[in-house]
Length: 549
Image 1 (cartoon, rainbow, N blue to C red):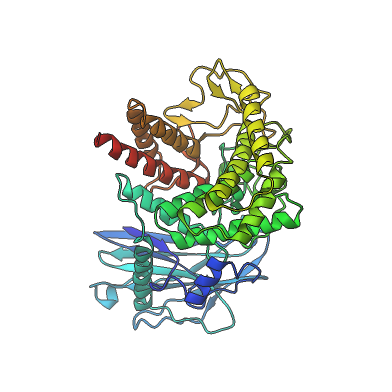
Image 2: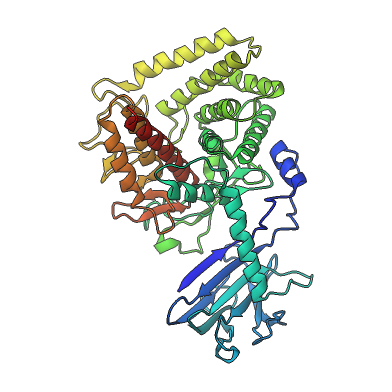
């Protein structure tokens, strides 16, 4: 049996020119997008019997507004016109949203009388606030059934036929084929890199260019534990990694749109007196209250289930480094920074110079006391360094140039004095922690942990898995070292190939991996796939250089 699900996309062009230009230029930033007329707001699930015969059961139990709103379920008048059996359509209606479930049968080469008839049966369950439906049917070789879930409104819905679904699927496949064609990656791991690029595109909200960290919420980082967060937002921290990957692999439009998102954040920072919001929703809003849904059990009884994210109010100073690095990379590999944009960069850099002594929660997003995190100090150094480089390369006026140099060098000296452990020959997490790790450090089975949760109090409690991002970063670090010490390259390849074994059957990575090999945390995770692409790109190029020596 083959199962395919997809969101329909018109094959070409990817978007009307005026829509695409508005997104890239940022003209839609204050406009509430009503949606493109050429996009079908459908979710399609196609079930096809490839060989033999198979019994299939479909269950649909919607939970509106996080299972807080009641809904009604009823059979609507069919709009199916296949010329065969007339299959019913179900409508689920809550106070704020109505959804329609339709089905259509492709008989293949079978005679019409042997085609399955899809009958929806209403069922009640104690866990839902309205009835759901089930359907049971039998498929023979070559037969297929497509289910379409779509918004239901006052207007007469488009008629669903097998021919319509086949055409929509073919157009969607052509859209993705056309979209991936500019990719410049032709390396050893092309299949997994291509899949990661697809995932990044799927995580992108086209009207604004924002890329969410993951499309899911409250999938646990520790089964049964409390590390359950909502990742359906966009983090400034992702900016430099995102722009670098998109530009180096040929996706200039997406990179320009994302760069525009960055400069929108700078404008917001200016309005806030220099303080940059660390995250925002897909429409650019920064008010993201964190709520706990106590009525939900959570995945495998992992509570609490959270929506929103309290980290939005955190002080995370490292984001200025990622922001400036993203702008620098955009200027270097993409569209040059304009003079007006440079003035905005200048204001942010002046602000950075005033906060270098402050403590924060950093990339670790601790929920305890603020600390002098080394990563944040280094990224503040990056922020000033990239602004200085940009001024030098473009000849921009820089009235505070020497002050920027002074503060940048001061950060470097402080990090080397307080954040570097000579016994370990490595930087540590914060100025307050200068103890060597347990034997084996932060690696286990070729995977890398952020930190030891048993020894580092991050204010959350519980444990977490190894970080996919950190493991790919280790691969890239070994690869860069391998350019000078060839002994590091085999180790980088080994860790990368080992990491590939932890992906699921679609080459999808979540945020973390358990000791058992199970994926943990929200999925698909943008950071994980950005790091995968970057590691694969760097490793393949270095291996190529190595073989030519």
